[in-house]
Length: 208
Image (cartoon, rainbow, N blue to C red; front, side):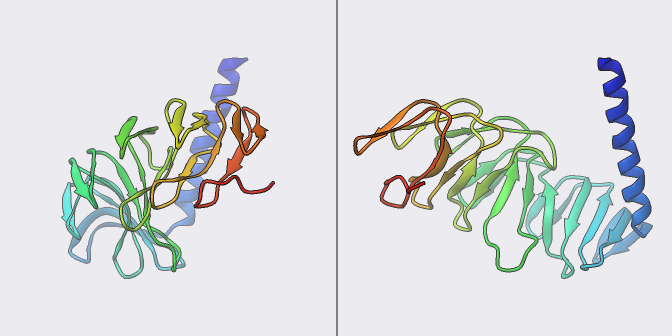
């Protein structure tokens, strides 16, 4: 039964890949904006997704060969680092995916680390993939959100290492939101383990 379910999942995965591939208009073995691509496609919104055969320095980032994404103005959107790289005060490890906002008006950026990685005092869960576990940063480079790889204490709040609810921080490092890994008491009230709670910037629990 397990083998059948696995076979079904694999089949569906490749069917989706084939469908997505057929929905795009690909150009092959072409140079665009000074970059050589094995294949590249432009979406209806104007964004580009291409496959580079070589590592390249692009817009001061060491980009790893493979898939890379640009907006319509050829500004980087998503890419993988080919080597360790210091960015806004944090040393990001090689093979980290960096994602800049696709939507106008959004700020900051998110990273998918290739393995669990210590960032600004917290062990952030890694994923090793483009769409894996994300760690968020403010535009300033301060940690904004992360999925802890183990239960973690933040501002005397014991936060759960949940894969569904991440730990959110204010830009000053104060706790903003998390799922409780243990009961939490404040102002004569107890919040039970497993509950997701939010805090204001003064550290007070927001009303339900």
